[in-house]
Image (cartoon, rainbow, N blue to C red; front, side, top):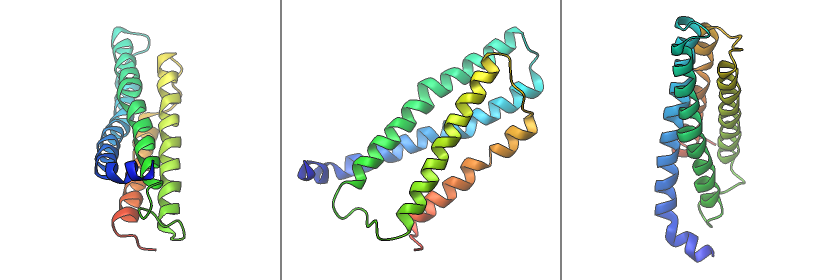
Amino acid sequence: MIDYLIAMYPWLKAGHIISVISWMAGIFYLPRLFVHHSEKVEVPSQTDRLFSMMESKLLKVIMTPAMLATWGFGLSLTVIPGVLDWSDIWPWVKLMSIIAMTWFHFWLAKRQRDFELGDNQLTGKTYRIMNEVPTVLLLVIVIMVVVRPF
């Protein structure tokens, strides 16, 4: 099995990068939809239902499958000998950042459900601030993988 994973390394890495890009695109866009939904859309209305449908499809059709693929490809890469040295600090920082990004994904899913039920309690300003969370996490993750500062 390990020989197979070693042979598949470039494909697993490509799949991981593609799924990360897809996940991040959604994770950056969904809070922006929430900003406009909370500030510009009257509840209940046809526009409210349209925004809820767009948010739901983005989350369920693009973001969640991309998140699962990211985790699947990433975990596959970690079991290939020589790819990771868990005695270094950087993989642990990256892992904690990925767990935080996953928490953010589920936080967004809860907010999407609130909008769907007409029960959003947060402001556009809150969504603008929260939209910075994945940016910071992405910076940490990329620096850990590329620079490996520790």
